[in-house]
Amino acid sequence: MAYQLLGDPGGPPLLLIMGLGAQYINWPDDFCAALTARGLHVMRFDNRDAGHSTRVTDAPAPDLRAAMAGDLSSASYTLSDMAEDAVGLLDALGLESAHICGASMGGQIAQTMAIEHPERMRSLISIMSTTGNPAVGQPAPEVLREVFGGAPATTREEVIAQRLRVMRAVGSPGYPVDEAEVAAIAGAAYDRCYDPLAMGRQGLATIASGDRTERLRKVRMPALVIHGAADRMADPSGGRATAEAIPGAELLLIEGMGHNLPHGLRPRIAGQIADFVWRVERAAVSKVSRQAPQVRQVDL
Image (cartoon, rainbow, N blue to C red; front, side, top):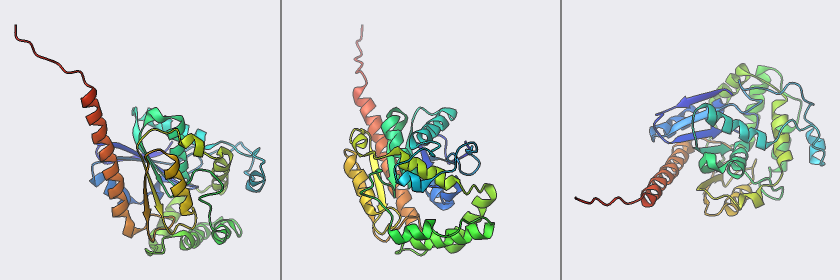
């Protein structure tokens, strides 16, 4: 697993999990800086099949069309495997638990961690994600055509052009897309590692993992759900369904936000996450203090 540590190691640990086909450099540097400026110890990493982490090379090519029809035989792994990857990273870093924040598919991985590894989590933060229920959180048909239609990109220039087209389709209408930044990150991601099958393998993992709604109802941990009200890649119904499923979850719907973290919203979202994390930390300390045995001094 390729990872990067940012900020004060003594601060509350926050593990960031990126989305479909994305690398840890897709977490904007200034967004991470805003989190560390608020005292958090930020960890970001490449999922399997992304960046410098291990890539699957000895498995069948992902067949998304067959998977949508119910044939999951080409799935190389599921979100449970990807959640175990994140748990393994916590093990390697010597962390018993952390706050887990995932975006898009990363949010689905974080939800899976909350279901299957709750003891490793202090809280769940799910951004622009969904529950796996096919009735909610679906992309607009025209966005699907834009994102997955056309010939696969192969060259660096084609990959950058494709990424720009996608961000124009799914970005935040209330906040302009920084196309120079998008192009720079897409080029850097290509240079680190470009695997054209990775998105298909990860996408198939989400399909193969099914609907988490009923299992999310059993989650008992602080949860914050953030979603753009103008998200055309993951309809806001996915965020609402996530918050409704998790008991006590907080829901933040942001007007003008699409399926990205635009410059204009990064300070606000980072602030919301940091405030939430610190509230959870203070509550945990207060709970321990209340449970501690009271010692009465007796003078002899």
